[in-house]
Structure formats: C-alpha cells, structure tokens
Length: 475
Image (cartoon, rainbow, N blue to C red):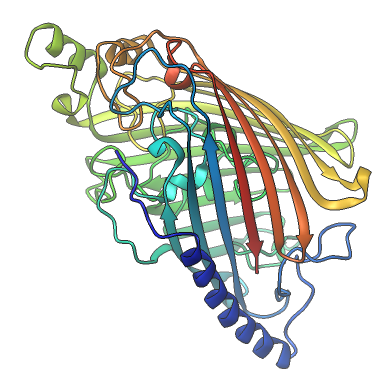
C-alpha cells in the first residue's frame, strides 16, 4: 500500500500562489460592491486577523482556501522484524501538501450550496503504513494502494437546507460549511451530497483540526470510528440534524467503499451503507465554563472479510497466510460507539478526550485498524504570553484491537494498514505535543512531536519518535 511520490514542495507553493491571486481578485471585487466585512478573520482578543483576506459576513457567497504542508520524519528505531505493511524502521523524511478552495452560496436565507476543490500530493512517512494511530492526518487524502489521478478533484459538493421550528434566533459563526449568521433556536437541518463525515460527526474544538492543532489520526478522530469514506476520506450521503437550545441530534446515511480503503463507493444501499447517529449536549455545568459531550454510534454494511474465518482457512491449509480478502461476503456489518468531550478550564486552557469501541469481528474497512481507543488531551492559547493566536497542546492516546485481529496479524495476515509478518501484541500508545505560532495574518508555522510505543500493536518494534514541521496558510 505505497503512496505515490510527487514533485517537490514547489508545486504546492505554485498552486497556492495561483489560488491566492484568484481569491484576491474575487475579494477585491467583493469589497468594491461594499459586501465585505471583518467576518471571522479576526481572532478573539487579537487585532491581527487570521486570514490573508477578510471574509464576508453579509454577502451571499463564501470564498476561502487553505494550504497545509507537513514535513515529517523520524530516525531509525529498533525492530526485530518487519513485514510488507510495517512502519519503516530506518530514518526518513516525507512531505504532504493539501490545498483546498472552499466556495459556498446562499440561494435563500435557508438554503445553501457548497463546492470545494482539493489538491493532495506527497508521501506519508513510512509510506503511511504500520500504525493504527498514523502520524499525519493529511495522508488520508493521498493515494494508499489505489491508482488515483494526480489532478485536483472535487472534495465536497452538497446542499444545506434549514427548516425553522421556532421564531427565536441564535447567533452562529460563519465559515466554509455554514453561511447563515443567525439561526432558529429550534430547527431541522438537511444536507445532501458529497462530504467528509468527520466534518459533522465526532467533532471536537480542541482535537479535530490537523491544520493548526494535532496531526495524529487517533488524536484528531476517534480511532474506533470506522466512518464511511473512500480513499480520499469522502463519501456521498444525507445528514439530518435537529437542533435545540442546548442539544443536538444528527443522523447520517452514507455510502461505503466497494472494497476496504477503496476509491469507488458502492451505490447499492440495499447491500452496502453506513448509518451514523450522534447526540450532543452543551452547557456550562462545570465552574460555569463551556463544555460539550457527544455520544456516537455507527453501523457499517459492506463486502467485509472475517478475521476468524481467515485464520481458520489458514490453519486448515487452504491459504498460505491468513487472507481477509478471501473471506469477504456481502451483507456483513461492523458497528461501534464513541464518547467525545471537551471542557474549558479557564479562558486559556481546555481539556478534551474520547473513548471508542467497535465489535471488531469483521475487517477494518474505511479509516484505520483500531477497535478500542482512549484519549485525553489539553490545549492552551497564547494569551498568557501575549500571543493570542498561538496554540499549544498535548495529548495521549492508547489504541487496541480484538483477539481475533491480533491472531490474524500474528500469523502473518495483512490489513490495509498493518502487517509486520508477526505480532507480539501490546496496545499502541502515543504521546503528541505541538506548538503553533501565528506569524502574520493567515500564516502559521508549527512544530509537532509524537512518541509511539509498540507501533502497530507490536512490542517487537519501536519505540519511535516522529517530528514534523507544518506550514499553514488561510486565505
């Protein structure tokens, strides 16, 4: 499952420059018509905006973009053996580049449409294999064993319909996926189209943003949430959401890929689909500070293999190694649950965490090979040292898999991410810390350090320390 290698970072910078020039022209035209405003570009308590150009608060359209470039590497680390999907144990560096152009338009005050273009290139450290908690979330957008086009692609295309259920309104933040600045306190929202499920499910203010916060897959998302997605991380489907003053419940029906980690989605919802439901409660219950708790459940149906069957076929001599692909059958399912919380401690420091569980009988299919996860982290802003737009954070996460999955890997089986050829099992334990410095307007630079014990659940390999330098710009 090798990632394609691409040109130097110059390509990413060139594409960014072109996008910036186009956006600058559009925003100048917007300013001429008198529709531009300060918008959400200004950071709280800071006179320095966090985007290159202001975004409209009153215009009917939205245009913005981002460029995220991650240079990541590690030194050599001890490994008694390696397999086809091992995290490489020799020193190396790799770079990923993700460029996104966001556009949105308000057809009416209650109907919005969105279309986003994306360009993802580069290579993940260790060829993006060998870890359940992989070290760079941007590698989700890159090729993982599938022959994808190197051209920019349509990332999101969806419509949002707001149905008011009350006359009273609440203020709302305007961003690339939400245009209305005032919403009915009680309402239904409906979205239909192409999207990333984690744009709406399992969100966490302090542990979801790989552009300015943490980089690890299982820090930014619940590792046991095998959310429906193709190789790029997107799916097609519908989301229905009910919002009330202090609580929200949302439900999504989404398409699954035809094969594990595949690029093509299965449009036959009678045999393959994903149901997702999440309840969210908000309040100021602890020390009168804002907090959120989210409870998630999902059920995936697809052409899945079964770990116990793959092991049995191998022990009976029917396969040379356990082969999950040989046991695939339509109509199998995988389900799981998650809990996600965030809590302000004071105006500068917040804590967050997740718990995740999946049944693990059938193969990991979409996100990562993780059946159990526990995470705890903290994030601080730079107000205390007079850098209000800086961020610093630390998190610890432990991941695990069920016994059948362990035995499958120990006998030499391969998943779409893991496969050392053998396994001396232990939970995968990851510590991550980062600091993001705001340079000027929409420019940020970060340093990120991750220390991983028992990579890929294997005591015979590691530990490994992975460093990253990240350049990010918002425009």
